[in-house]
Length: 312
Image 1: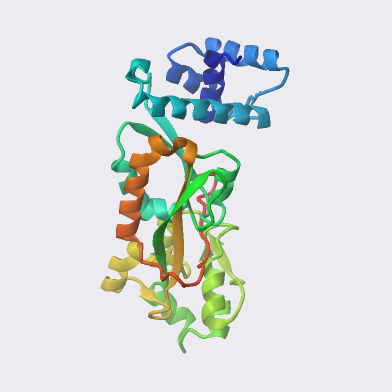
Image 2: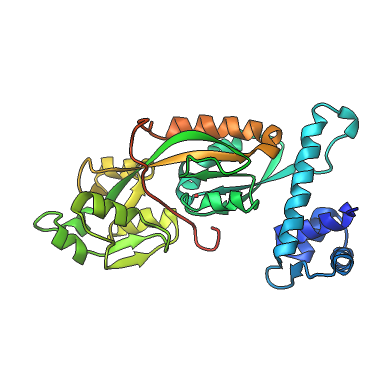
């Protein structure tokens, strides 16, 4: 039989990354947290936490942490039908995987419409965020995949539209004779990180060529816009982030009308269905209001992005 005081200490250390923050969360001393984790490790005969800056869970530690979170969610769901359980000691924390461009454009508004929960966001490319669900490390994800992960429900949200943008000065310098395949292979591009395939997808769709040979690496949605404004390079920016700059002429589309749509879906674990119901409604409302409709028979779309070091 598990001792949930010990398991709660373990989960707090893994999720906060330190014994000190876990102690503040649990309203005990760091020494008490350390003793609980050590006792649990001794009882199970295995290391559960890799001590460091930050502390991380071993494979066994992560599995136990996920177990604690699932128990917490089940208890939260029971409160609606069994009020005798009493109120929760703290708001439920929802761990969600989301791509950086969604976070920069529409996802925060969904979070703001959800009461009485805390958020622990994992940032990853939407083509990879479903892996976090498969591994049981998050409860829900904004993902490019419309195929349900086992144990999950999936809802189509719409498409995040991207525009290949650059400053007018950049276009004059690098494309004096127009945006041609030869010219664009010599012009510095911008790439979010090693998972970002948007520039490559756009080049392939528009010109039939591969990834840009010259690129800056900029793992930030905001920096992508700022760098385009500064004339550093060209890149695929969410239309909603650059619409004002395009209207004002501070940015221009490399090829007017040649946009790239990335379909997005919301997948969430059924085990947390009750607890996630409010967030799911908010995500569907916010996503469908901000994103473009996707034709039912349209193409699958492209990928993007992850903030470096967990900055979808």
